[in-house]
Structures are given as structure tokens and as C-alpha cells.
Length: 205
Length: 195
Image 1: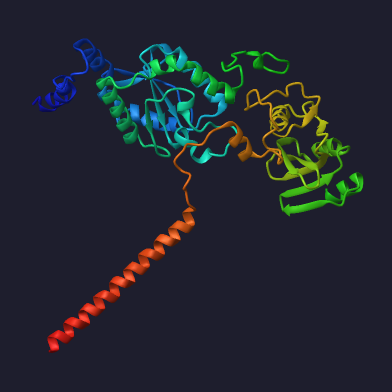
Image 2: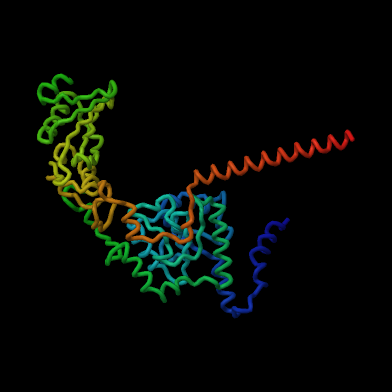
């Protein structure tokens, strides 16, 4: 009667026994907790955001793997950069990424984040995301289906469990490199301005 | 209607594109007069869109105001040409409130100054300092090469169509060769059987 449940428990806890020698017990346990509780920032940057609702709802049900949504950057572990990323969006992505607390991971969806995709000669779209923020996992495809996204998440979970990814440290250590690249496309003022004048001007709201 | 426009605006350039679609070209001095005339007398009271075409060879922009009747049964395109190098024209905000965002878009993408529109700041771009991107002298690929880097590893990329043709031809040749071989084999076997 409890077979299904037991099976699920087994898959969830099975890797508890496969402890690696390069991790001490505390690190291993912390990583195991982290990979089983991934909070994904509810933020879509491009057309790929349309694949995220089916991933997180009943059809593909990412929550059975411990992956679920988070409302604010400060509570999130993973930011998904889903699809093409214009300069204007890149400002917001950088701001959001810097607001997230450690440990944090970046999952990049779609060929646009890999090499620009179909916007390879666009005047307003970046080509390689890893030049601006560190990327933990790329999921290619145009667009990747929810199965691929889950595959990417599982690969990311594997890396987290092994203690392989620490991209936030990379970002902190190589901040000058990233900042230089960011300034090359966005100008000296990388942070977005959050002025609300647009609805206060004459003839506005 | 068309003859009235011809007479009062001294233009011969009226095209009936469809039974419900007309296009007229007038000078920039008279375009607002004509729009008001169409609105007051013939019910073209909705401004659908303002579009711009870049005629770089003739050195002018063609700005088209697309007007529709209230019943949405007939459309009138009113076109006027302005000089590319001193691109400015009066704004239509006082007549049509929705013109504001359309003009803002054109100001951003073509660098046209709409005199009288107070809100001509950037709409979809941010801190753009280069040539307005939809002007034809703006070379997109040059901009990309200058500001962005391509991912390495595709330097040997080939033309997909040519490669597909080549692969298909190769497959066909291989298939035919296999066919000939099989035929020869069958012949040999036949002769051996006869022996």
C-alpha cells in the first residue's frame, strides 16, 4: 500500500549514503538540504518564461523535487534567466541577482542566453550571459520544454549536492571582470533608475 | 470625397488601394489641415497609428497617419514627406491624445522631433546614445561587432542550405552505388546458379 511513498522516500534519501570523500559531514549535509529545497524567483525575462508555469504546476510538478517559487529576491536561491535578455532587462537581472542572498544559483534557459540565438545581430540583446553574471547551468533549446527545464534543475541539484557550484563566490572574487563587461554594454550607470516620474508628468495619470 | 480632397488640397496623389482603403500624399504644411478635414467631414475620427518609412536615397522620411472611421469600415492613410536631416514636424497630441505614445516611439527609433509633444523621452530603449536604431544608416552588425562578443566555436559554420544539398547528394550517390552493387551481386549469383 505504501509502495509509492516508499519509492519516493528512497529516491529522496538514497543519495544520503553516497557521501563523497572531498566533503566533510557538515558540508555534505548542508548541500543535501540545499539541493532539496530550491526556491526559484518568480521572474521571467523573455519568452521562455511561458515554459515556467507548466513546470511548476500539476502537469510537471517541480515541487516533488523540492523546487518551488519565491516571491522576492531575498528569499530566492535560483534566478532563471529565461530567454533573450535585452540591455534594459540585463540591468534588472544584475540588480536582482545582487539582491539575492548566498548561496544563489543562475539557471539560463534558451539559446538566446547561450549565444544570442535568433537575436544574434540585434543591437539591443546580449550574447553571452556568463560575461555579466555567473551562470551555473545552461538549458539549451528554443524554447526548452518543461522536461528540459527539470533536467537542468536535476543537473543543478546534482552539482549542488556535490558541492561543485559556488558561482556567487566567483562573482564576488571576479567582480571587476563582471563590472567591466556590464559597463561595456550598459554604460557607467549599471543600476536601473526606479524613478516614478512617468505617471506624474503633465498629461500622465 | 476624393474629388473634394483633390480640389481643396491641390493633390493628384490619391490612391484607392481597396474599396475601404485610401492613401493620399500631401505637403507637410497641409497635412494637419487634411486630417482635420477628414475628421470633420467624413467621420475619420480615430487615429490608428503613425508610421514612418526611411527613404534614405531620396533623403526624406515618409510619415503616414492612419485614420479610421468610427464604424471601422474605412481607412485613410495620409502621408507626408519630411527632410531626413532636419527631421521635425508638428505634434498631433492636441487633436488625438493617443498620438503621444506613437510619436514617442518614432522619436526614439528615428530621431524625429515632434514639436509640441512634451513627453518625447525613451520608450523601450534605455540610455541610448548612438544613432536611432531604425534609421537605415545605423549598421546593426557593425554595432554588434563593436559592443558585443560572439561565442567561440562557430567560426567554421557553413551555409545550411548548401550543406543540406551536399549531404542529400552524397546520400543519393551512396544509395545508387549500393543498388548497383546489389544488382551485380544478383547477376553473379544467377550466373553461378546457371553453371
